[in-house]
Length: 520
Image (cartoon, rainbow, N blue to C red; front, side, top):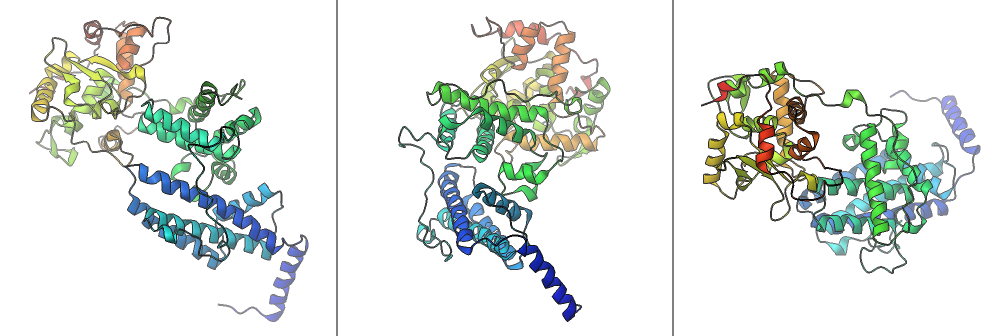
């Protein structure tokens, strides 16, 4: 390493002194006070995480606890090197902004003291949460001298709080819990709402009384949501940031789509409406706010063309593949399992992927004169049913019966009457059986030369919808088959169309390609 000469060193010191002299240093006492307040918030978050994580059966507590070692080590390493990450810099800015204090130069001693304090707080939070997840509550107290005099803030109360204490955090928790108990949401919808309403807490403040939420707060949330960068959830640089920090850090990069932003904003509006229904608000402070703009045509999914369908159903998976694990390579094996049947079922029924992969043997009736699939809740309400209108009966197209689906379903029913039809399709990390199959299908399309950004498994629903329209089926019955809601005056009355009526419609559809090679 080259040695710095005395004159050069003097010049460096002169630059540093001049830059710091332009702004007075923050008092050490004030810095420590701000950092302690920051740590109290982190500790409260740790208390909440320690309470909620064990309630989720999909969470691996051991893995969660072990991963906190890495969080702590990263914070300590950063503090030692004084090479502060974007996350640390944004957190410093946020702390000072809330206190109404201007940010000191990064060369100032007060800036470094603040940065080290923030990192010490994050390291302590990781250690305390790890201790709680491992049941070592005697160790779940601050060891760092900077925070040793602070007592546990505890998580924010969920039940039993005074009636006048109606904070956003408490009501978000109550809202999500109630929807979950009522089985009004599938698990993915629950997680989406927890995440989106967590952003709302970031924007307005978790402790804010719901009555004090104004139209300005809702407008701010809408504006923040529209600026969320694409792929923010899987971008490492954004991990640990609040949504406000993410938006500030992202700058002018590509944001999420209009449709996604609108969905997120609708989540908030639904929560505020619930607050009105439950008597926490007299009126939702939404006014005429909405997410404006048109969906990008590039984002729309397309149906498979006739040529693409022919190529797919004449590919090795359907006419002969090398092995069960190499289905895109030509061979002599034809394994008629879930990977074989699920695309065919989707094409001729229009069912969503989640609806197909979760089917139980009892949901399929191939003995009836009108063979049919019932899309319904199971006894425990675990099935992925998007909305109440998604509960329906869908007749099976004659082509499915001709190519052997009746025999396949009957065989599964005899082998395991109470089991899943496509039992070999394992759930993904998110707990959904559709997760792994969706990835498999995308890879398969790529391998057989059908990769296209607008072609996904959901394209089969577009094929079915177009085929029904081309066959002259009325829109109201297309909605019944596809599981879309009927918003007409009479739509909420009765039990819906009988299977025989819909069967007459389903039989009309055709795709102008041959499926005879799939028989036998």
